[in-house]
Image (cartoon, rainbow over all chains, first blue to last red; front, side, top):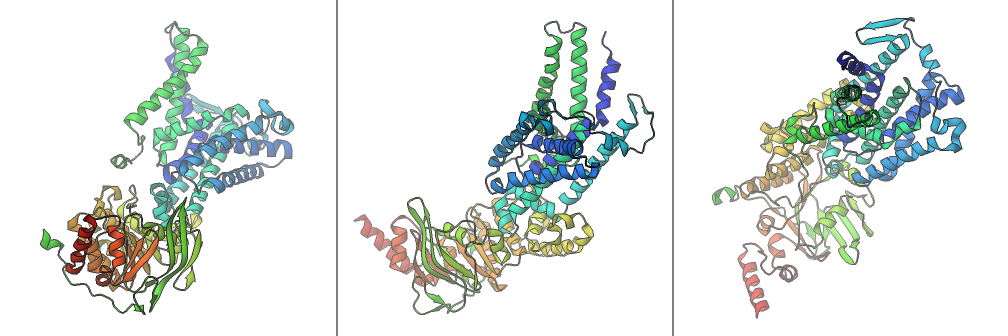
Length: 327
Length: 304
């Protein structure tokens, strides 16, 4: 019979996992880009890759301390945002989409190529960079927790740091979006020529937004690799699409949307994969092999997202009133 | 209904604006905007070819001309929304050539658009606040510290309420701009432009698509701008309106300025009649009996 307890506890674990936090933060970055500024950034995976590699390479190849490795990752993403933004932000929105999707792929392929093997580890990626972060852990050794949330000191430290960053980023974003700065940003989303005619340097604001959301993505990339290894194939375009799915699920121009969206996404994904795998084992789905079952969860997630976009396009936290005026 | 749209008060015309004969490119006593040799081509079409033009300060100037005369293109060039092939222009004695649109606006030359650009998913109040210039909180780092900009923000809000009350939009301040009617959006766009305390207001077809009931109130608002010491330059097709409120009229046709003068004189100018009749035999040149008579004669001649 199916072990429902295991399925549910595995799903519940995803609620506070560092991966969920990483996706939430990356989605918050996209909310700044797409939801608030109207920038179609399809290269969030590239920003995450820069964070992951920037952090890992700084520590492994150059022996940097943790804070310096974080600074290197952020600096890399700021430069990346400038390179993307300078030629494209003057153009129409869809050009940015094309350029970012291509640039993110270029970043991933550069990290995959054998030429930089000593630095990037090529297709095998990198590991063994967690020592510095673990050494900062103030929690004494041991296992803590309750129910399904039972972790050792490192895992709790990682969750604590990851979610603290997410909360701080949410508060920061909430504050700037209700300020005059956020008003200009939202104005640009609605009609940038009108904002320009009111004396605002639209190009400069779009650049600030691109850099800010990109930095969120980069920090998310660092959180993402702390519970696992850096593997280049993680940074394919599908990563960006999953983050868009989370954003649309929660609500594009919201603060809590990306966070709750990420929790729902990962809990559902874990639930589907646990359920299908066990259903196949139990012989409920005789037409399916266990390998096919592994793929089915993404199909189900895709269907779920389609249903949300069709029946609740503003997302879970989006303002229903906005929907009355679809352009 | 017609009594509502009749002028409530006879507008006070500003006269004696020019030096010498009222001909294309004539000198003004006190020009606020001076343009020289401005050209813009789209492919083989010369959309704008203006040798010299001066816009008088403290007056309402209308820029008229048939469709495709280059009025909006000239507007775009003067406000930095488009780049000319050649030419230079100054605003209050400072050169504006090659200056990006946002800097032009900061200097006090604010425009509206032919297709209204209300920021739909922002509230009416946010639309207004966006118009205020030099806000401390528009800097990303200072935006995080509300105590730096809260006072300025409430001052701006008070000013916005004041302007919105004048435009009878104050009850709508918390609604999305997208929920306003077309005419109300025009009003909002004009009100928003006023938030930046401009010296020159450039209105691109302020009456396009506006319900006749709102026309009079819009006209009064434009006249009020002059009373408050602002200069107005507007593009318009409606000759009745031009005759009613404009102090000076500049007529464009095929990219050139073909006539200038006060509204009553200019409509009798043969070049203007040619410009309109050349393309629009049925164009209404306004209810001026003399002009109308000439109009009829000209049409008869053409028909024969």
